[in-house]
Amino acid sequence: MKLEPLIIFSSGIIGTGKTTIMKALLNSIDNSFYLDRDDIIQASLNVSTASCPNLISFEEYVRNDGIFPNHAHAEETPFGDMINLDPTNDSGKNSQFYRRHIRDQSYLIQIWLARTNLEYGKVPIIDCVTIRQIQDGTLKKFANHPFFDGFEKYHFHFYADEDVLYERYLERLNKPKSDYDRKRYPMNKEISREEFHR
Image 1 (cartoon, helix red, strand yellow):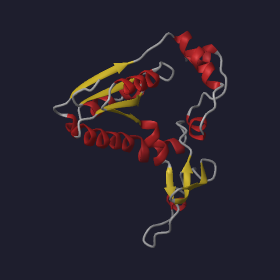
Image 2 (cartoon, one colour):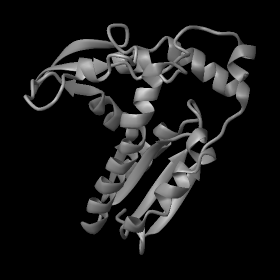
Image 3 (tube, rainbow, N blue to C red):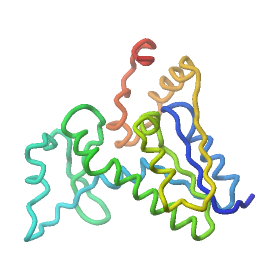
């Protein structure tokens, strides 16, 4: 089917099936496209090592942030050697760098991409809104952005039984993961059902 331009948001904790369902929806709407924030974040974690005469090096910029050498490594990209940052969302200093430089910027990128495609008659499907983004008001700010004025919006929230989520978590442990996923998700080791529900 083909729809008039509108925007679709999904939310829910990891394992509720939002990505699976949103991608199925993508295949059902001819003029839709899928915007996964994880893809934007992953690309944003690469910092150029290029030397700029009027700027200090990136290493010097973050000298006191505890990022080097434990949370960064050299990576070869199509655009040359870059520094790849560990996106771990813990309470450490690297998490602070993520929140300051990447978290909200990734939402702004999604907004601009969605707006441009809405103007061309597309239906953006926005994935990767978690409970945290609902609680801190990010979803509301996103959905009420002036860029989306005049377009219909639909919000799909996913939930599942805690025991079902735990079984899905165990299944995910055995699946191959990208380097990004291995670093990003803190639960890449098996934990008890009680620990998981906390």
